[in-house]
Amino acid sequence: MVKAAVLYEPKQRMPIVDLEQESPKPGEVRVRMAAAGICASDHHVMMGETSFPMPIVLGHEGAGVVDEIGEGVTTVKKGDRCILSFVANCGHCRSCRTGSPQICDTNRLTGTRQYDGTFRLKDSDGTEIHQFAKLGVFAESIVVPHQACFPVADDVPMDVASLIGCSVTTGVGGVINQPSITSGMTVAVFGSGGVGLNAIQGARLLNASKIIAVDIHDHKLEFTYKFGATDVINSRAEDPAKKIQELTDGGVDFAFDTFGASITTEQMMDSLRKGGTGVLVGLAPEGMTAGVNLVDLVRNQKTLLGSYYGSASPHETFGKLVDFYKKGMIDVDSLITRRYSLGEINEAYDALARGEDGRGVIVFD
Image 1: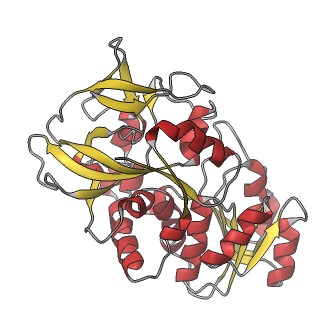
Image 2 (image 1 turned 180 degrees about the vertical axis):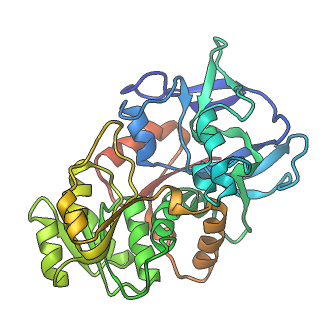
Image 3 (image 1 turned 135 degrees about the vertical axis):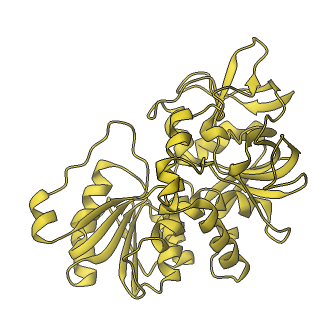
């Protein structure tokens, strides 16, 4: 049996329940969880803003230790400390073969089930339980595809490793993996949550000449200076696009919407200079659209891009980020401002909903 937080219905608290867990099948491993990040993507599911089958164990940002391996697994061994990828790419679909494993077709099609289409968790009533992103890290241990596991050395703390599994890769990777971005460019980042703070760090890595943070909370904007912001704008107090145009004499080269909403995407595109690029990183609620000025897009040759999971192979980006962390080039420790037990998961999401600074992390015994 394994204890896990299970979401049975949207907009309900998640109880901690005992679940029956099957052993790993061929190509799978069992990971004993060490740390799991509190991310807004799970909150969208909790609030019914993103449709997922239920009941489900949420959580997709985590790290743990492999304690059992299934038949045929050679990429990891028992005892390996691993960052977990929430896209365990198949390696064989068109997206994987053409160099975009972060949008693996097979992973998307099989969704919350394992690759053979079955489940590894059941509750006391015999109800099969879904695992978010094939992970469901809000559990004491998880059975996952071996492709989800990226071994990491002992000198990387597990709470740090967990954040590299999502927010650091999504934020930093979404900046440094853009093929046309270059050193010295001007950058604006809309949203100062976990992903936004890391996008700011990505811009700092590229020696951006100006890094403008935009948010609706002054305390979150103040926190961005720690990670490289040079200027801040409270979008409740003033028009961010107009202010960015003033600060940069015509607009930024790159802007990143790490929140994911109609208004932030529209503001992002309006903040660009001629020839500028807007990158949508944050996941909006399902069905949400943005009103983009099509004349502006054409006449000023602007570009609007989507960036999923750092825009590149998660494992390749993990490797870079671990190296950056060890060299002191990115600060992951300071992102962690709150720690919880698994039993405090609902309180952790209450803090996220209040817009508290930094990232919350569940630490397992």
